[in-house]
Amino acid sequence: MARHLVYGGRARPMAKGVSSLACLAFVALLGVCFWAGAVWIGQAVLRIVGYGF
Image 1 (tube, rainbow, N blue to C red):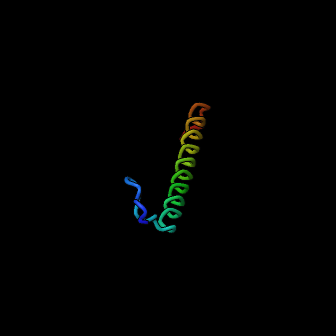
Image 2: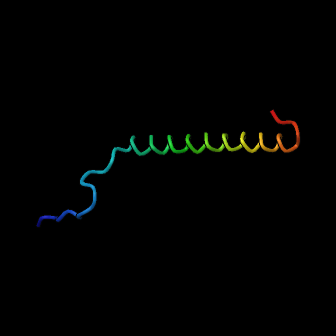
């Protein structure tokens, strides 16, 4: 008996390397955003205190 494919789904799953690479890129992007925010907040605090650049 033939099995019917589910409509709307992928015929083949994505390669495992692609999804892990996307996850690694996302984590790297989160790290960059975190440190950029930390530097921005640090500069704002130094500017408020009076030691600004």
